[in-house]
Length: 278
Image 1 (spheres, rainbow, N blue to C red):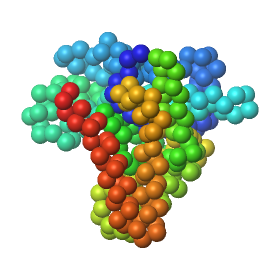
Image 2: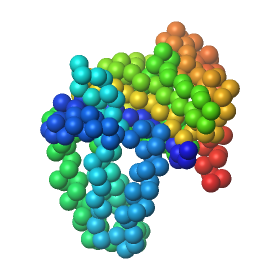
Image 3: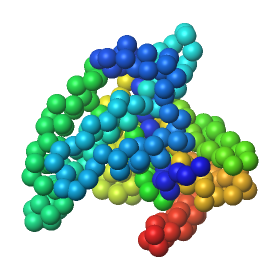
């Protein structure tokens, strides 16, 4: 099964958090939701089918999502793909970060106008509470180290079967928010307010603050597992190392914390080098 070499940090919200809650409840009940193992491939295929050059407008997509079914006693948890909004927002971000001449070469003016309209109309319109920019963050070829602080070792779910492997962590969003606050405070206490890692943890925390209090956070290794054999998957303990490092910081043992952090950096350096080679 093909899967992009990417990891994912997702938030699943209760269907009741959305204005059109009945649509998502019916969607979950219909069995149409795509498994997270298949989703990245299907989304990429859908994108390739719809976008051509020159781009005249942001293409339309079906309303799909990943779903956690909690049975009849509770609302399903939904992680919408929202591809149209995400494409539009990404194009506008590229425009903001690049020189005007480069942006004009990448995107026709009518495409950027369409993107601005999509973001203005869709930003938070489907949710009761304050909007979050996306229910899913994606990282190619690696896992951002700050994501490991969103979960705990006991949240681990590992499946290894012939032709199929999956490694993910799932945890209540309240627990994830608490973990990020703890991690951020420990890093700031040791390295100061301006520490890059502390700022990254705070940014992730602000993202999670936009979601319903009964949501679930998922760290999914996604297609990265295809580059790891069964033994590596069983031994993969980056979340454990992260919290060992933070515990050492809390115990005023910075040298031991640095050792754990260095092991994390070394472990994921090879994955980032693979990205450069590709």
